[in-house]
Amino acid sequence: SQDFLTGEQSTLQTDITQSYNYDYRLEGEVVKTLDHSLSLSWSKSNTHANSVIRFLFTDSRTDGIEDDTNFQLVNLQLSGQFRFNRLSSLTASLTLQQTDQQNSVNRVSNGQLLFVRKRLFQLPRLNFKSELKFSEQQSDIERAFSTFQSEDQPSDVSWKNKLDYMIG
Image (cartoon, rainbow, N blue to C red):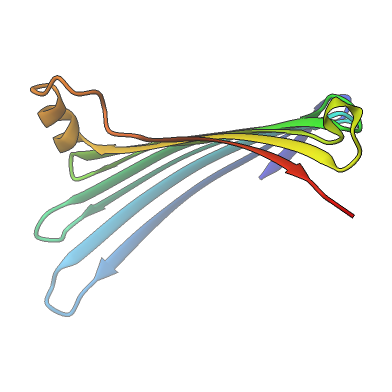
């Protein structure tokens, strides 16, 4: 694990791990497992904005069981918050992930965008909030079947807008 200062108010963190396990069982069976992991994280912060980017890759391989097993995971996360002024802010996050286990690939993506404005139109106690969210999860089998269908990829999308006024 190592931390680096990459500039004013920003940091890069890295972590690399590797492990090997040799398991001799009573039945004379030998199980060997090799694991690798790489993690990178970059963050920057100041009075008006915060940003974070995280990347993770893991790989695990096991030999000696009736069927050898393999597992890989790739994950990318992006997030940030920006304050335009003391009354307005924008927050965003995005996650992309793919797993591959025994040649079965699954992909997940989701995100959120949130805008908040206090004292809308300079009216005290009048606040506005807009939130956009999306989420999608799909396996390689679902992707194969969707190529034969004319419909778009299955996903969940929502957009909520809220106007609040407090009386009293």
